[in-house]
Image (tube, rainbow, N blue to C red; front, side):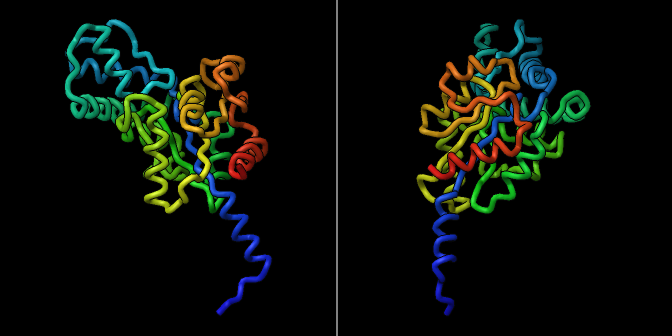
Length: 247
Ligand SMILES: [Mg+2]
């Protein structure tokens, strides 16, 4: 039998303390979809109603359930049952995969930081997004990011109506499927005040990135303690994530 030395014990304790769940938002955090996202909602709405929506979808950190519900309400139409809406969204997303790949882009530093996070043995790196799971996969796959994320433990737009409720969904999946301890710190990374709100409401850490329409000031006012212009500074990001892991 191997008797653990003081060093291996310390390493074990250290590794245990450093467990972390990192959950990345997708749109305007990992990728720029160049308007394809709004076209997906519009396309799904048209497929379901036979007419284009009078106003484009309001997105900004909302879940797909909420976005589609708003679109039907704004046009004064009854919303079909969710499984039908989700099916239409998935088809609209699949149809626009090539469009997204051509017009969109992975944001600066994303590939590098996702690689670095996935290389940390005691971290789980997944997504927390308002997109339904099928379209989240379409969006990250379009730029080859799918292999750098543990997508099966993420939380998605079909899992809840309100974004803060997605945190518990992801946490439960990570604990059940990856054996991460209860109470392991969660950090959200996102570009809207709704990402910040989801973190604050659930006792999660937040790294806000001003790579969407919201300014650093708006994100700080929303309550983000860490605000970065984008994800391009891999070293700084790892440092911040390690700080959260050590809490
Ligand atoms: Mg976003």
